[in-house]
Image (cartoon, rainbow, N blue to C red; front, side, top):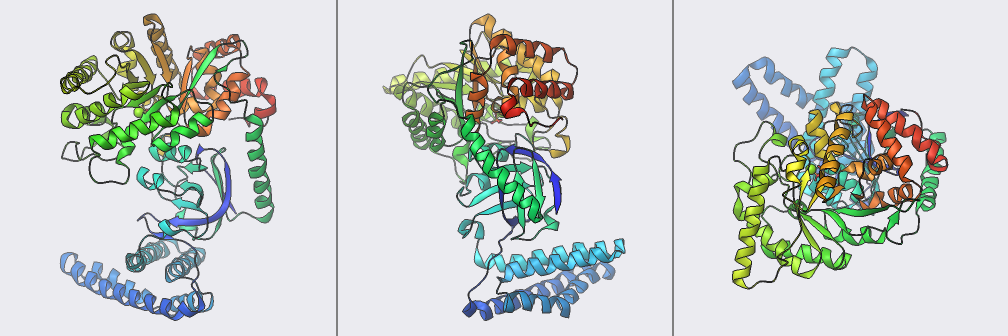
Length: 588
Ligand code: PEP
Ligand code: MG
C-alpha cells in the first residue's frame, strides 16, 4: 500500500479499479475476453510482436547509419527482449489461462518484469533496461490499440482514471456514470481539467507526481479529492475505512445542504448572491437546482471542446439561448467572450509561431482583438441572445484600459450593424470586465469608470501575481489564494467597485472553497460565482456566518504576512465557527 499526496481539486472519495492512461494517452483497462476469443487474442499479440520486431530492426539500421553501431545496438536488444522466453511465457499465461486482453497482458507482464528488475538492484544497468521495457510496452500497445480504437469510449465498468494529464476536451468527454474519480501526475488547482472535473462532480486529485509506472490497469485505487490523496493498492483495513468515509461524506453532504430557497443571507441578514460557473449549457440547470441565482460565468470557449472548426454564429446563439431557457429568462447570465489559448483550447486564430509563454502571449481577448471577425461573430450571437433574457457580457484577461476601450468600441459597432439589419437585442446590455491580471487590479478605479460590473478571476490573478503557473504542480506551494498579495489586490478591486457603485463578483475557484467564504464576505464581496458542486457547502457557510465575524476575519487576515499564516488562521476560525463540520479539519 502506498499513500501519495497531490492537490485535491474536486471533492469526494472514490474507491475503484484503475484505468491507466499512460503518457502517450494509451488506455489499458483490465478486461477479459470470452473463452472462444482466446486464440484470436493470442494471434493478435503474435502479429503485433512481429511488427514491433520488424520496426526495431528498421530503427537499428536507421540509428546505426545516423549515430553509429553502438546506438543502433539498443534496438537490437529490444528485439532480443521481445523474444525473451520468460516474457513470452508470462504473456501466454495471462492470455491463454487468465483470458486477459492482449493489451492488458502486455502491460501487466512488462510492468511485472520492471518491478522484478528493480527489486534486483544494480541501479544503472537495470534502470536502462526498465526504460527500454517501457518503450517496448508502448510500441506493442501502439500496434494493438491502433487496431482497436479507444477503449475509453466503451467502458464496461466504472473506473478511476489514472493519467499523466488529461486535456480539457478529454475530461469534458468523460461519461461520469463510468468514471468514479480522476488521478493525474500533472496539474494544478485551477487547471481547466481540474475545473471540469469539479463541474462534472468527479472526485479528482492532480499533481501527484510520477506514479503511473507503479500501477497496472485494474489495481485498486482510493482517491480522496477532499484531502488531495491517492492510495495505491490499499490494505483491507484501509479499504474498509475509506469505504466508510466515502459513505459518511455522502451523508455529511446531506447534512450540509441548507434549504435551497433563494436568496441566501448571513445570519444577520446580508444577502450574498451565489451564482453558477458553467462550461456547457447543460450545467446551468444543476446550478439553479442547487440554489444559484443565475450564471456568473459562462466559459464560452468550451464551445470548441472536441471540434476542429470554429462554431458558427448560429451555434453560439443556440448555446446561449439554451442557457437562458435552463435558468429562466429573468435570472442573470454572464456570458464571457472567448478565452482561447494558454491551457485551454489551442486556437486556430492565435499567432502562427508557437509561443514560448502562451499564458503571457496571445490569449483570450488578445486573440479576439487581433481577429475581429471571430470576435464580431460571437458578439452578434450574444447580443441576439440578449433579446431573450437577462444577458450580460464580460471580457476576459483585459490588461489595459486601451484593450477595454477597443472591446467596447467593437461591441458598439456590432450593435450598429444589428440595428441596421433590424435584429432585436438589448441596447443597454450590461458590460463587465474580468479582473484577472494584476495591472487591471491596480487600475481598478479607472476600469470601474468604463464598465457596469467587475468579476475577479482569482485563478489567473493568483498565477500572474505570484508568477506561478496555475497548471504546474511544482509551484503549487506558491500558487495560493490566501497569499497576502492576492488578498490586497482583491480588497483594492472591491473598494474601487464600491466607490464607483458597480457590482463585483469573484468567479475563480477560490469562491467555491468554503474556507475562503468568510474572508471574501468580510472583504466586502456580496456576490460569488462557483461550480454547482460547491454551491451547497458555500451556501451552508454563508447561512451560519455574521458580518462582524466575517469583517474581523478579513481584517486579521490582511495583517498577516504569508499565505501559510493566513491559511492556518482561517482553518482555526472555521473549526471554531463550524465545529460540527470543520472540527476534524487537521492542521496545515
Ligand atoms: C479565473 O481566471 O479565475 C477565471 C474564472 O477564468 P478561467 O479559470 O476560465 O481562466
Ligand atoms: Mg481566467
